[in-house]
Length: 358
Image 1: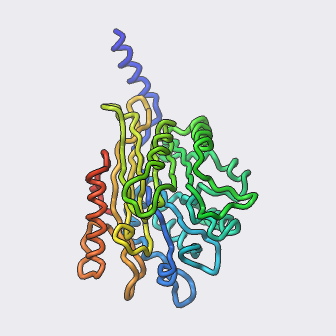
Image 2: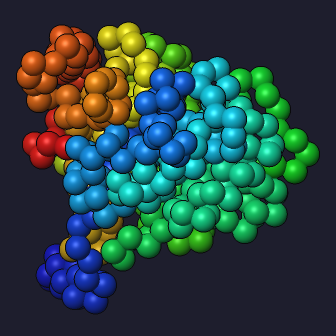
Image 3: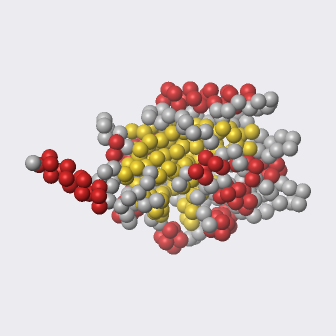
């Protein structure tokens, strides 16, 4: 009788639960902007056109219910500059938006490259483009107003937080706010976001050692801290190379899966070593159980490769799995993909390559 009542309660809860479709969120890595990228985008009229850069991946990004990218450059106005202190044309962010990205992460080590003014202007430009953004704030009162950030995506209430390990030794002024990695602060933010009604929680975090294909001990400790605080998705960036992904759950406990992606690698850049020439987009799929509980139904990765500018074309992202016929960059594409797959095949847990190509 007791089992019958339990089954009946599940059925009633399912009938009363709000109907919702599965949700897919795509995460992309570090959107860099080196000097060569700025020059390649400059038109004879003195404007900057980045539309070609993302044309090949736009269908994949746009097909997601929500897409997130790390904007690793301020939009600080002229003069524009690449490494070491970045500053990009506003049209770069516009092209990312037009490619389908809904949220821009701004807590990274380059967010203060144009100091406080650049941070404020970046926020203003992103606001004018109508995109979501978290990680930096013009004033503490703006952070208080904007957080907790909870997005209703097809009936799923998903909270987002964003933190960085540092800002290259540049300290923010007295008013602007950068969300640095601080376990006490993160614990408060997590609790605040949950208390405000977030059913699922994503923490995007800028961390780790540059150019290392495996996470360091600090990353592992922070990841464990976040998982222990019931964060559903930990999405990492900064190393400029890919690092492994783990979709963990107790045996047969699909409703309590948690995902850690240690590094998405570069989304687009002018970096030239084997492992920095590309990265991955990660798709995370959410569903609801019969009793209405949201959970991670699965995750997959889609590798991308940056083809540098050449005669007649700008920098452009391509599917790293596809052969670049008659291209001088085919050898580099193949080397990048082989290295990335070697890491993923050995270290990934329950995160396969996406069967749907970008």
